[in-house]
Image 1 (tube, helix red, strand yellow):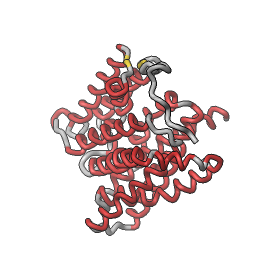
Image 2 (spheres, helix red, strand yellow):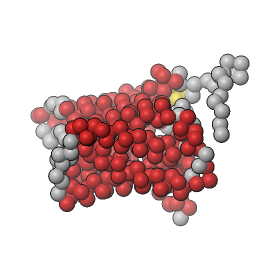
Image 3 (cartoon, rainbow, N blue to C red):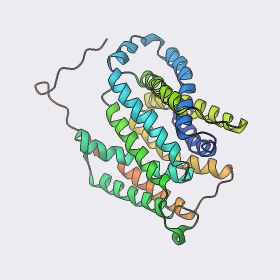
Image 4 (cartoon, rainbow, N blue to C red):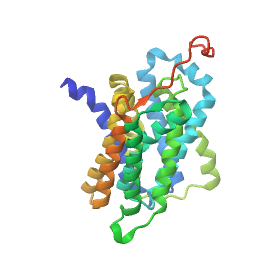
Length: 310
């Protein structure tokens, strides 16, 4: 029972994020990617705000810290909430949710590579091998993941858009290491900023969606589960397990996506399965303990003064 309570938040977070791929694929025909992104964050903001005020009620002074870091939160909102989400929904217009989730599974390896380039971390040979293996799996899915297999080798725009989404999320994660605002508060602030930024765009472009009842239900599912509950559960898991152990559960995302997609009538191809397994093996080699070496911490003589904390 203790194990269930300990690991269920991380597992459920991946299940709810997997729902975003499958449900998003089904409602993208009724909303434009811009509309779906705007409605998602507009609906999720009040839910996240209530959750934040409830969980962080003893640390409300942290909102002042978020106000001091406003410019970083704007960048994060543009990258992680608006940029990543727009690219993901645009991708689902031409690629399958399984393809999208398998390609997205390479994200931890890309983040590890970015940490080496940007943050000065070092990566061991096994980690380098894992990154290379992950990219091989992605190439297989991109080129052969369609229903035609080897007889129909092609690259669809959605697969390339997912790669763009991965780069946006990688930048989001790397920059987030500079943020001192608590994760749940930071997520709420960034979601609110995203809805605020997109509102004038929606006024200019206009809302053209006329969704069916199924479309509205799909939007509600996206707002509640992948947007509000998944972020909450992920932060709970990080608190309980630590970031490294929680990160391992990201490997469940393509698995859950495939299960949900098949349950709803989609078909998997052999190459999606093969490529997915290769990606997961590569990601495991890259993210396992000891695969990377953190950048050296500056000494007191070399370090810059730390910002004040309230």
